[in-house]
Length: 129
Image (cartoon, rainbow, N blue to C red; front, side, top):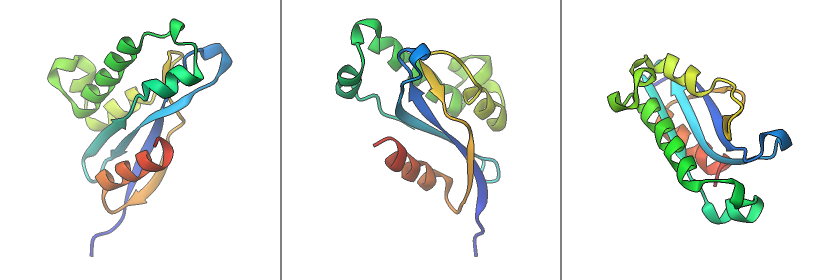
């Protein structure tokens, strides 16, 4: 019988005006050492962003590029620079480090899972969609 393994995850947030601390959840990043898994899922709902925030202050294309970089670093894409070359745990720690940009992550949470990829899908559905 397969046993549950420890995983860690953080919610990816869009924080258009950092000083106001208002945000919307746009993704999830998950790391499971034992399953050798790191994954990210995100959805930038432009309609929702435009409804909630003054989009004159936001460059949607830049946000999309930053999210793509997030995904490339998580997957270890060699074209994504030195950080993408780090091991899974280091990449996850870098992605979830505190920052004051418009793309931030929540505190890291943990759980136990049989299937890290399925858990990523489930968390994405629960916390973002």
